Image 1 (cartoon, rainbow, N blue to C red):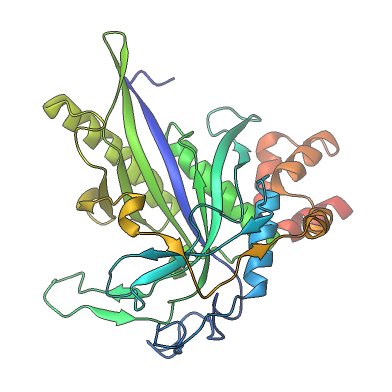
Image 2: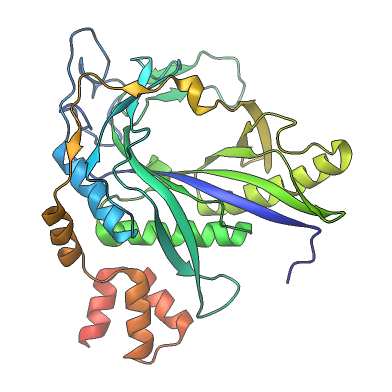
Length: 347
């Protein structure tokens, strides 16, 4: 049991690239590895007069995920423009969802890394659809060459899954992401290849310190550039120690300093400051005038519920209750994929 003089508080934002053949609002390919700037068109480049057309399959995959994550599905959802400037965002705004996300509150149960055979639950705030930005290619080694922009990824459909700050250790955050990735691959909604950017996580972390009968919360830091589960665990362990040292030195509490974004330098094993974090008002959200609201039929959700198949948590329970497997053995088997589990059940 931890004897640290503080409690770690972690919330995650996970961006999942959906397995569609074309982008969210145009017909350009989403295939990975094409030469830079070859999978673009007037729509995803944001050229004047180009109009978006919604990808039906992306909506279906988002709904499938939302049902599996026990989310409240909106009867009506809409599209909003999130306005900000960045070199790899050619339109100057991102088509996203603000106040009416397609998937509302939900939860995910996952194996507790500290208590074998027990589940931990993380509540989910929302899961919303949005288009991806492009990719900036920097001279990471010397820092002297020009930065280059590849817009192939611009417009790729993403599902952003946002959790409540229910995680209290780096190990729990890693276990949650591992389970989420497994669930998404079982659903076949994404290949979740972190090396190719199909699954990307940002972590919001701060400390709650008990002192003189009150709880002191340190300023929240968002840690980016987490491209592996090991990086998530290492970054959170480092950031926890950094925040504790910073609080002991300066004593800053939440509200006394703006929320900060820090990047993870995997080679150096440290987080580095990037910028102060914007508030939602800074993005000047407004409804996208080129896209109509989307209505979700109740029958569609019922069909998805019936067709989804057993999920990892359900399969672990079945393997333990019906086949007598210990929790560790059931977890190992389920982690190998649905095909391996089906083979075992049929044997």
